[in-house]
Length: 150
Image (cartoon, rainbow, N blue to C red; front, top):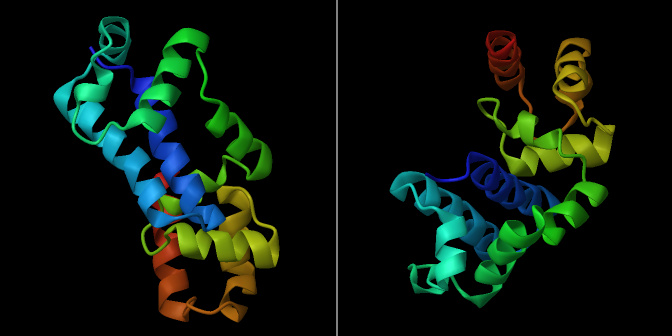
């Protein structure tokens, strides 16, 4: 059985790297690893113990090292560093329709928004309309989607 917490961490690393503006290939590697583990129900702990994790397609040395760290220490230091630099709550904002990592980075950098509640408030009070890419129609879709998430 695969580790849902590990998959969530890998997905979050991918999103946070994108928000940070890092190399998109690096972010995609984490996202792909999460998808492979989830879709193939890979037991990473077993793979690490057997030393076969690196045999999986797309699992290079750097990723194997991070997954081994997770199995041995229960954490991934890259993730710990990322969430110390960027609020992890930004991941929730990227899950709203019409909002990806780029727009999330924009609202974080320009308006200091870090939570879904702050994001919703900015939609309603008009602050988002001053940012590039946030048309009235987009804001209406966002408000509707935020309401559905509640």
